[in-house]
Length: 155
Image 1 (cartoon, helix red, strand yellow):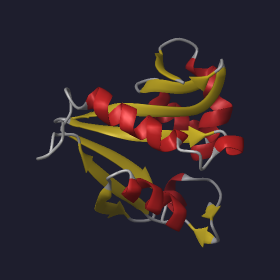
Image 2: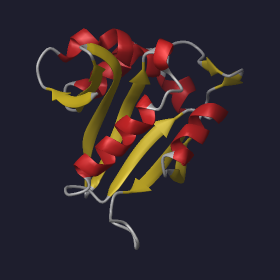
Image 3: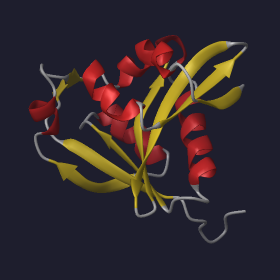
Image 4: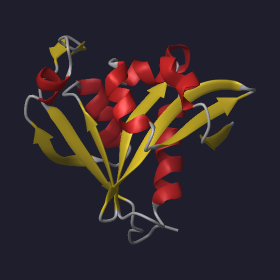
């Protein structure tokens, strides 16, 4: 398994990015300014992530997607842990914005994120059609945060 940053031809990963953010113009809002990472195994791309610099020591995980055939096998968590380690020297906090979907929130909580705040009506204001995940109509964006600083007992 290898995780590497992609600096050229980021568009070739659009199909996978669309799994996590289903409106292409929303992806274009951050893809050009974000750092794109891919997790590959035996030359097959299994996961992608985009991280942006939001200023004042804060970075944001804008997109995290795992190929459907390998979801639930730990690749998303491996990507999050890689990114947290990669960015801890330059940033003190990582944010991620997501919908109010129970499985997604549970995943991020298991990755060390906690709720920071909500952006009311984000999905209804910025997306052209309703987005439903796990039978939940997404309205507000739930913004989660994770400290990237070393904690007592970390090695």
